[in-house]
Length: 124
Image 1 (spheres, rainbow, N blue to C red):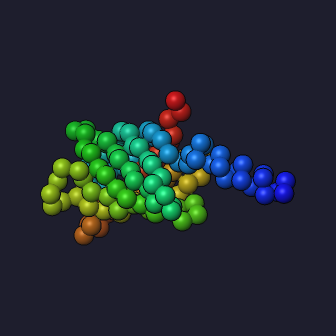
Image 2: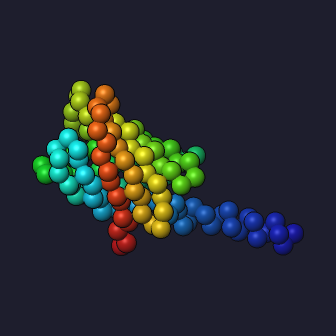
């Protein structure tokens, strides 16, 4: 009985704490197409079943991207697109989760160079 009560309390409390990946991030990366480093912000949200939504504001001039991803262990993989471009920038982003950071590579569809990006959580 005590074990069942404890398990109920643990699972009942989980939604209160949320996913540790949910939140706002500082973005730093390298764009091989522009041949320059960039910075910005991102927001990640677990929408259930290991599926995430992402929103990035990066670069100069600022570009806005949206994405949908899947978490598999320490990997978080997104398909993304530029928000207001009706034909161009669509790609894949593969992050590795380690020590509170997400680091990884991205590539645009039908391109040959890969960019690099790091997300560090902003504690509020």
